[in-house]
Length: 266
Image 1 (cartoon, rainbow, N blue to C red):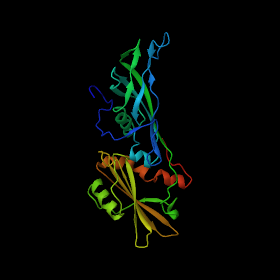
Image 2 (image 1 turned 90 degrees about the horizontal axis):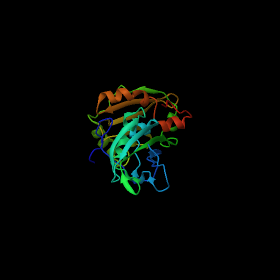
Image 3 (image 1 turned 120 degrees about the vertical axis):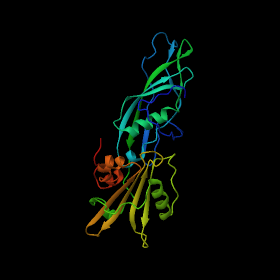
Image 4 (image 1 turned 180 degrees about the horizontal axis):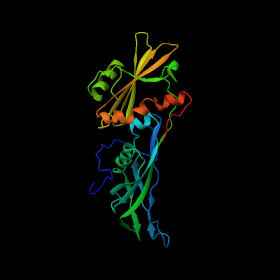
């Protein structure tokens, strides 16, 4: 793209498929609403034709935000060139969450439009595009039932891996599952079981191809009468874990739904 400018000036790999106005990834979706022209066409019918989508990519919900039920809306300001390509993209209104804004920008780079037409001639024109991220999580089916609503405590035993990707490789092997494709969805969960096939740990890996990659381990401990969930996290950057710990200690959103609560939402 010749002149695409991100208002956040951050790099983030694009990863989505051509999709309709909404897309679901593990019960969560990002949806770009129809573009709103800044200067709607006026005058005789057919004199001005406003920009519209030819096709667009549905934003992929950031993994951490999807797992922990964080919702928001980003409003993009897009300059649609005469070719129909986005020539400039800015965040006009932030969602309040950096990763959501980046997901919206990421998708918009690949959008294609029917450009604005004046007297049948393509011209540059700005459109405003609201992008909404909404969680529609169902109750967690694989979370052990006697641990729904159990207290969370920090695990004194650190995660025994040096990096998130090292942990992902090892945990996927222990779970006898493949490593998920982070270019299709931005999170995955793995269960570890004891010889009796009882789930002892549940791991969440989120945004592993980004600098904000994170692995979270929930260990099901205590006793049947007094269950306790031990929590630990591993991040590529320590401050990411620190900033997100209150969400992590509240548990995945789908578990909060199963326990009858919605947890903290912003």
